[in-house]
Every structure is written in C-alpha cells, then in structure tokens.
Amino acid sequence: MADKEDRAPMSTSDAPQRADQGPEGSGATPATGPASAATPGPASADTADSGSVHASSALVVDPIRGVARGTAPAPLSILDLATIGAGYTPAQALAATTALAQSAERWGYHRFWVAEHHGMPGVASSNPAVLIAHLGANTTTLRLGSGGVMLPNHAPLVIAEQFGLLEALNPGRIDLGLGRAPGTDQATARALRRGRTDGAEDFPEQLSELTHFLDGSFPANHPYARLTAVPKGEGRPPIWLLGSSGFSAQLAGRLGLPFAFAHHFSAANTEPALELYRSSFRPSAVLDTPYALIGVGAVATEEEKQAHRHARTAALGMLRLRLGTPGPIPTLAEAEAYPYNAAEADFVESWIGNLVLGTPGEVADGLEALRNRTGADELMVTSHVHGHEVRHRSYGLIAEAYGLTAAS
Image (cartoon, rainbow, N blue to C red; front, side, top):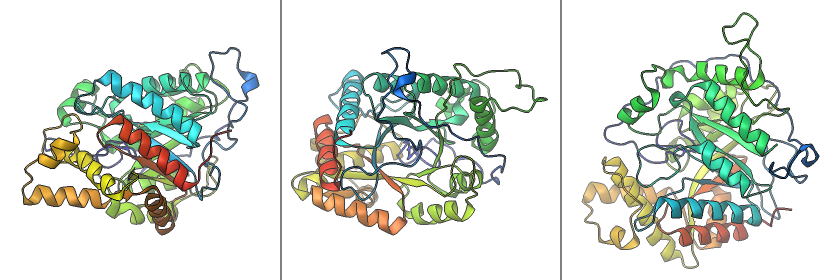
C-alpha cells in the first residue's frame, strides 16, 4: 500500500513522503455516486477454453471476503513491492517476488498484492498489471491484485482494459486496488500524466468513470456510452479503495466498497479510519456489510533479536526516502554502521515500533492482538527488509505460527 494517503496498503508507497513530494489530495467531500454493479462470482475452471487461462475449480466463491485457512483466526494475505536490496538486481528482485507468490499459495495465504511505485531505486514494482500477469502465469489459486494502482496516473479506460484482460486470463482471481496518491515525487507524476490535470481531488470522478467502463454502464447520453473496455468477459475484478487517512475510508464506506488501510505506515490513523469507514458504510450491490483489511509490517525470525536487527534495514530505507535520497534497501551492515543523528534515530525507532516483530509465536500473537483491537476483517502482512531469503523465511514462519495450511 503507498507512500502517503491512499496509496495502497498500502501500496504501497508505504514510505514517508519524499522531501520534494507535494501534499496529497484535497479534503474535498467524496462523491456519493452510485456504487458499482454487482461483482459476479469467479468463473469456473470449466469455462476456460485453453490451458493458458489460469482458472481453478478450487476458487473461493466470494470475490471479496477472504478465507481463513487451517486454524488461522482470520484471512492472511501479503503485500509485496518487489524490493531491490543493495547487491541485488531488479531481475533478482522480480524472481524473488515470483517465488514468494508461489510459496504464499502453498502456505495458504489468501491474496498477494503488488504496488505501483515510480522513480524508487529500491522498488521494482512500477507496473502492477504487468507483474500480476506474470504472477498469474506462475500460480493457480492465489488471488492476485494491485495494492494499488494510483488512479490519477492513468486514464480510467486503460485500467479497465488492463484489469479486464487480467480477469480474462485468471478468472475469479483478480483484485483491483486503487489509490489516489501519485506513488512518486511530483516531477515524476507530471511526466507520467503528460499534461493531464487530473489529481487526487479528481479521484471520485475517475473512480466513477472506471466503474462505468468495467460494468458497461454509462448512461445513454454520456460521451463514452458507445465505448467498450475490452476484453469484456462475464466477470470483473472487485474494486478496493486503499488509503492511509479518512478520505478514502469515507468514500469506500459511502460507495459500499471494501477498504484496505495502510497501517504499516500510518498506524496512528488506523482505528479512526476504520471507524469512519464503518460509520459511513452504505450497503451496495458489492457488499451488504463493511469489509476492511489492514496492511501490517511484520518480521519473524527464530530469535527475537534478529527480527529487530533486520527491521533496521527497512527503517533506514524509509529514512533515506524521507530525506529525499532513496536507494536500494540497505544491508544489515549498512544499517548498523549508519551515523544516525538524534532526529534520525527517533524516526527509525518510531518506525520499527509500528512493526510486529519477534519469534513466529510473538508475531502471530501480535497480529491477532492488532486484529482484535482494530476489528479488521483481514490482515495483509508486508516486509521490506534486506535479503530475499530473510523475507521469504519470515513469511513462511508467520504462516505456520498463524495457523495457515496449504491451499487446497
């Protein structure tokens, strides 16, 4: 989920804003336009015409509400940024993300989301649709999605076609998570938009347009009524709104959409945002009751001390982003040798304090305590520490301790 309000869980721009990044969108009153049309259930594997379409008869019927596997008390999912650590290449980072998705499917995680970030040397996930297509070809049952697509960077028709294509390739497995922040600095945002004036304040209107393209539901007198987002199959991916403050929480509630909150970089706002989402909720054709997940930074190791040491690599990466000097995720040696001043040391300790760290059992207990405190329906864990092996091992330990079993 992203770097400030309404990046995905979390996006994923999960880091503090850069020094040159402007303010987020305005606090304009969210649109209260019609909720999107009913989201059809996942297509059956029998509807696939060819083995190149990755359908499965084991798919979950409800396209939004997650499944708690094994003895897990709640659904557990993963947010991944395809982070690039010092000493690694982008190709290695993407290969590690692919391997992690395959393991996540085997371990019993419910969904696997990837983010949209631009101009960040430590993140390889710049185009969620392309990465999701690759992951779909390398998994069979895992739900895949964007955490999220930064809608102001794109024409809604393009996103409707990209995710319609993903849904056709992977029936019943795709989530479309949307954020309203740029996912980058302002100069890069201008380069992405090429003169378009749409910004975060236009998000409700863009969301309405995207929904109409996905559903083919423009009014007859609308300029786009004769346009079709292709391919258009029987199903369409459910839309999630992502955020780190109250704007998207309220908008998601008013539209009756599922909501994903970026607790991993906005922990102080989690409970107020979820309360606002629930109090604003209006039943829709998509959901009759609220459904919210939260992104949670988590690191599990066999020894508690090691989890805290590894967390410092991610914390230093966030600090550098905050200082306007982003780079690859620093190594453990770099993080421990860095000459922190008092303010920097405070930032690092504060950032680590919002993570769930420790032995597998401690992390499982911490996740459950957080879920009980916030009332979240689902947890989405994320880790940006240095070392693909460390992250992979951490997710496996968390899955086992939380009670997941392999997907059927």
